[in-house]
Image 1 (tube, one colour):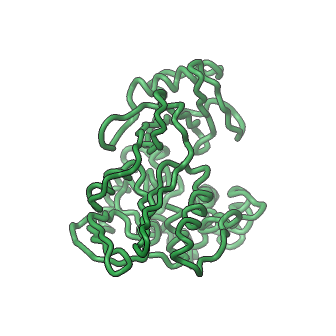
Image 2 (cartoon, one colour; image 1 turned 90 degrees about the vertical axis):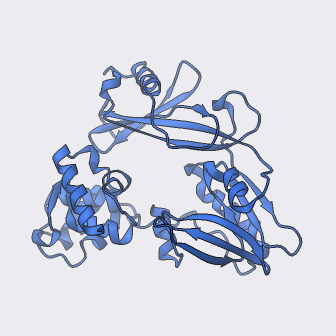
Length: 343
């Protein structure tokens, strides 16, 4: 989401929950048909098309472009679990598991430890997934080999998973498949370019983006050179400070009336953008209804207006992780508020 925010800040039009259902080359460019969540169709034109659809990279080429993909994907599910905090300190651990894979454990949301990840090959088309009981048990066993506090599957308070779209290099073991990205350019003489992004991961995404623009540079001769290596994402302009220092410093100075718990929560979730969330608020009353875990109505309104949140799940899990800290009644209160604001 924060990358989408950065793109919007630079002038991009961001259309969430919108699918490209068809695209064709036309008059030296591309003409694409988009369908939003309400089923409305819109046609747009572009000078280039980038197929960065992750696990759906092959399906997009077949369904929307009627093209035969020149690559194969291996889809691998990676699951994570969140458990009550296993150790003191803010450091992370890389654990060598007995199956020769590595598993990480790192502090998460102050009171928890995040443990991941698994490698489970998926067959067929990408589909919604969840961490299986076998995966939860696997991660607990991996952690139990190293930490004094022993886990059982019931200790997992939350789990989530994603599907990695790996370039199929023929390796039989999912863990051995390359994590490197592959860029395939389809651009016959005089035709608008189509760039397919296969694979990649968050730790190298900026380098991937730079390489993608290098591929497209012949069609965009006025593109600037690479500039993202040291660019902060929205809210990340903290300099040498950390969120705790920002909360105790500038945020406390600008909003002295703000409760300490809320101040620290906003700093952790938004960084310097906490000031945008608060705006001209001058008293606790300006924050609106309080739901717990430092979450007020004003922050939810900001997420709805500026971060494309549409449902309680967006607020509680995709944006704030407050779902980990709220009681069921508080979660229901957030859901009611979001439903009222988006009705």
